[in-house]
Amino acid sequence: MKTDSSSATKITKKSKIKKIDRIESSLKESNRDLSLFKFKSDTVITLVVFGLLNSLFEGKVVAKLNSSPLVFGPICKSYWAFRCREAPVLGLFPIPDPKTN
Image 1 (tube, rainbow, N blue to C red):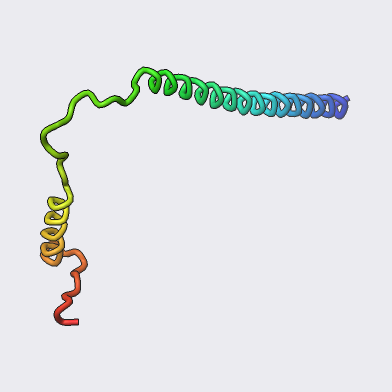
Image 2 (cartoon, rainbow, N blue to C red; image 1 turned 60 degrees about the vertical axis):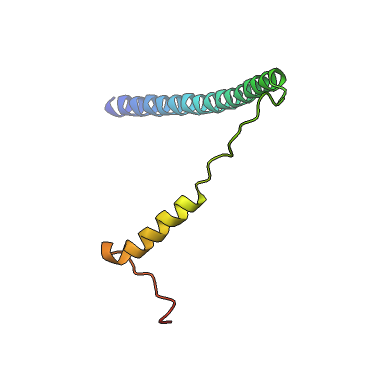
């Protein structure tokens, strides 16, 4: 009798494990399908919003500015040149001197 009850509990455990596995696999599939649907709907919404914004603004010149835009190139170059000269003092890798090489 004892063996019959233990085998019955093993069978119920196995069936529960199989049921849990089936539920998990169906949840994974559902999650994948929902993620794909969300991606598609977000893409459509984005295209519609950009289409509406594009139709509202035609790109006509309304005013011209008297000044040119700011250029950060010389500022950045001078900043990095200063940092490169300062590098050996800070303990970073020294930059080789082209005069000695």
